[in-house]
View 1: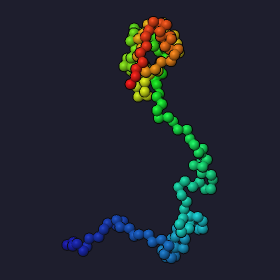
View 2 (view 1 turned 60 degrees about the vertical axis):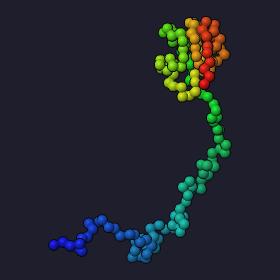
View 3 (view 1 turned 135 degrees about the vertical axis):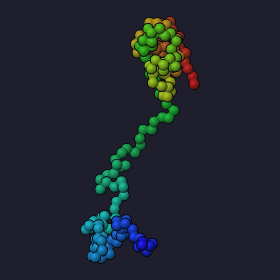
View 4 (view 1 turned 180 degrees about the vertical axis):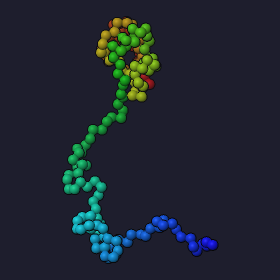
Length: 153
């Protein structure tokens, strides 16, 4: 009959701890598994993570002052007069950001707004609501008989 005294762990379940540098009979005597001489064989061995072997390190090769982007800058979704002409030919006379999102002319308003630029020609009268207009775009829209309205949020 088996008793508690007969129980033993399975073979390979318990492993002896390595005792490095304990003479020739022990594991890794003499050099303790660190090879021969050299920087990594010393007592406080090794080099820091960013050490590049004596070559000028990356943090010293880069310029000291980097360009810092402006956090107050507003980025616009750009929309040209030619795009508005295309929408006007479809029969749309009132152009708002919601209509532009529905027609998938712009992807979203996360950037900060819509700016109308003067590339292209417009022949139909259109009422446009946008966040910004270029001076030439305003002229072209007003010449065609349309009106503009700036959105301020």
